[in-house]
Length: 170
Image 1 (spheres, rainbow, N blue to C red):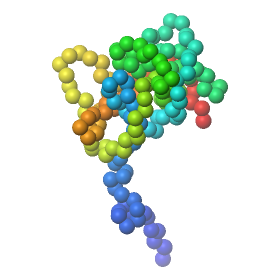
Image 2: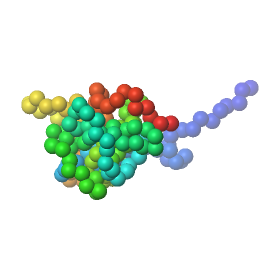
Image 3: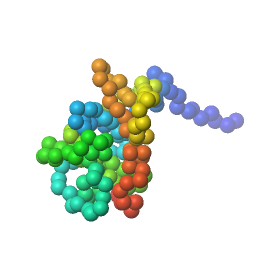
Image 4: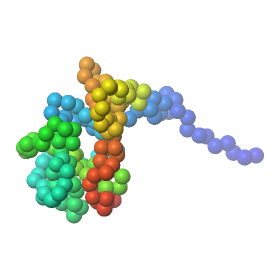
């Protein structure tokens, strides 16, 4: 007779919760007066602002590159990428290093705010507006108390930008 194999079940008795399987975590940050978030799994590092080396003939939101322990990482100004003008950087600004499609990129933001744990069902779709805007990089809206956090799709935000050979360090 074959021995029966006990498989773990999801339930309150074994510490696993079915709802936990439906939650996602995000890093939230500020750009100007607005709050945005990205998937925490894309974040590799958060560091203070340091000057970059400017590369010629780049988009205005590509601030330059920095050497991160031997890896050259392009740094993007999210305020400028969102059409809000260039950031006047200070020591209080933060760079979030993210991995997107096999490459590392840096995102210049005003400040990192929080880690959000969100039920996937609570993420609202981006409303359809009558004005022609480029909202392909908006992945949803997360209600947080009386405010809202805009969820970004990094893959869409930087789909055609940055050096293709900026490999993710293992």
